[in-house]
Image: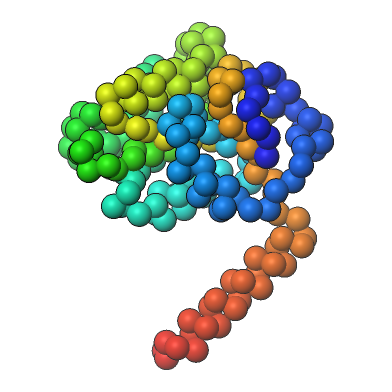
Amino acid sequence: MAGRSGDRTLARDDWWEAQPLWGDLEDFLAAHLLTEDATRAPLLVLGHPGSGKSLLTKLIAARLPAAEFFCQRVELRHLPADLDIQEQLEEALLRSTGRRIPWPDVADPDAGVVRVVLLDGFDELLQAAADHMDPARHFTYLQSVQQFQQREADHARPTIVIVTSRTVVADQALTPHPSTVIRLEPFDADRIRDWLQVWNTTNRRYFSTHAL
């Protein structure tokens, strides 16, 4: 996990290996989602392929209480590369609900619900841009996200944005200075053993109380 950073060292494994390692991702996310900083700049989640970035966004979307958060997950790989942030959100809403819903109308601002946007796969958006258009167009994508958050805050629609990307392309986009950046580390042998122990214990309890 790193603090706020906007330089190009974010794409370097040797830089990340020198950073302190944290094991409380769930506690970090729970605290982050309750801060005002989360609505001012995107949280950038980096990781190598298979590190669990997409799974993390699915877990966040599934576990956030609907009474407090409206959550929209966007798989950037499935969207045209030339859409702006609001267009991406409205296209994702159309694909998930079958209805065209203007982004400002997805939640009642008077209900006190915080909007959470999960932009999964920024690296694939960069690849699509490189294949079909000037890749420099997306160099300021994360800054556009921050500007979108500021606009939403100005209209009393506080919006948290979490963006996932492969570490290797982190130097191909400008990271806003207020952003928080973390990198997911792959499971080592100890973490795999601990995860399996929790899995086996949980399932043993389930099957002991649910006769087949």
